[in-house]
Every structure is written in structure tokens, then in C-alpha cells.
Length: 149
Image (cartoon, rainbow, N blue to C red; front, side):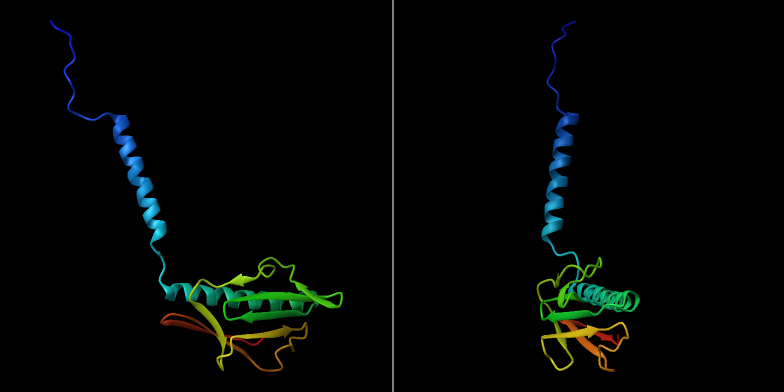
């Protein structure tokens, strides 16, 4: 019997694994390049995060007896704490870094102003008895935020 090898007409396991890995890498690149969230969900998430951070600052002010300040612009906001005669970055986790909105999301107040600040005192008197009313907008989607200290 002649033991010469007849050429195979199939593919090897290595070739199949290479093709599958190339398909996986391509799918991953495509999924990162296509926006996965609608702007409505993004605006809602940003609003929920801002409300949580405002509540955290109010609680920290009350618990620690410190004054906090919330400063905002149309595209970002930050929290500061009063200490040693000056405003400094708030040391509390979640408040210690400025937060910038994703492109296209804008923060404004009820009158349309795109900047401002609010102070929170341990006695919860920083809002002057009023409400902080803000609006987050991104395209067709908007969310309203009301904070009373």
C-alpha cells in the first residue's frame, strides 16, 4: 500500500481559531465605535448622579458640621468644602473630583442661566429657604432636578 498523503480539503483547528479570534476582535472594535446608549438614558443617569451627590454633600454638611459649596457651569460641576479660611476641594469620596458632562449635555437653572453656586451649611440654611432647580438637557431629552438642602 502506498502511504503518500493525499491533500486535505478541510481546514485545521488552528485556522478556525484564528478566523474566530479575528471576528471577535472586529466585533469588539465595532461595538466600541457605535454609541450603545440613547441620550435619554444618559441624561437620566447624569441627573440621578447629580441628585445623589447633592444629597451626599447635604448629609456630610449636617453630619460633619462643615460648609459645602456646589458650583456649576453648563458643562461641568464640582463640590468644595470651607476650611482654614478658604474653599478647597471636598475630601469626601464622590465629591472630591469635578464632574464633566458628556458632550451635548447642558446644565442650566430655571431661568436659563448656565452657571451658579449654592452653599450648604450644617443648619441646612444655605439655600435661603428656597429650592435649587436645575435642568439637564441633551438633544431632545431633559431632566429636572429640585434640591431643597
